[in-house]
Image (cartoon, rainbow, N blue to C red; front, side, top):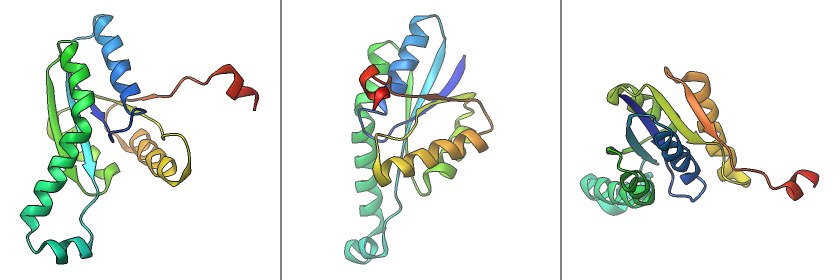
Length: 151
C-alpha cells in the first residue's frame, strides 16, 4: 500500500489535491495518506513576547491542525487512513523531511494559489519539490475556464 503525502495550507485551492486523491481511490488506488501543514518558524518578536517556546509550539500545532481539518475530513469520508503532521520551518525542505520520515512513495499537491506573492511562494515550494523530491510529485492545477484562457 502506498504512503502518499498531501501538503495543505488551509486554502480551498489546496483541497484540489485532496479531491484528486479521492478520485484515484475511487478508481482503485490503495493508499494511506499523510496530510501535512508546515508553519513558518516563530519570529524573534513572537519568541520575545511569548517567553515560552512551548506556548508558540502549541499555537503553531493548533493552527496547523485547524488548517488540515477540511482535507482530513474529505479523506476520512472516503474511508481512507490519514496521518497528520504539523511541522515548522522552511516548507520545501521540511516537506522533503516528512516524505523521508513517513516513507512516502508519492506526493500530490497543488501549484500556487491564484496570484501575488503568496502564489509565488507556494509555487516555489511546489517547484522545489518537483526538482528535489526523492519520490514522484503530482501537481494538480485548477481547471481554467474557457473565458479565462482568452484574456
